[in-house]
Length: 161
Image (cartoon, rainbow, N blue to C red; front, side, top):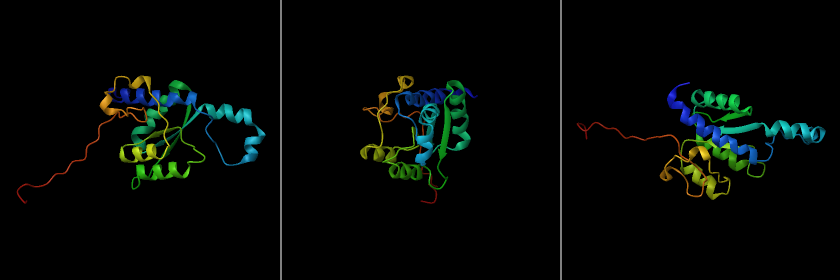
């Protein structure tokens, strides 16, 4: 693993560690399956994290695999298409409002994150591993922590304009 990915792995691992406080992750819509073996299903669900991520699979998959290996928690990843990126996952979270399936939402922009917060679809979490992140890059109420830089740049030819 490259040295620059270690801080991200740490933050991801800490973020995913919140699962111990969450209820079981829904694993299907079939009530019969839930009634047949509720204890076995709850046990398996407690060791599974559902991660919705807008980060490219190429970059997020190794981090999530390392988390799974280090913790023994299986990770079920849901990726958005390149065309939709975060907006598709946000729409899915809104649609699943009454029956949430996502444990961790790892996205790459703040506007939709704030939308989810306003709609009451996020829970605060103060990740101990994020204590070193400056306050300017964290929501004061603990709803999100920024841990990667992203810039939008406009470039133009000054000779033409």
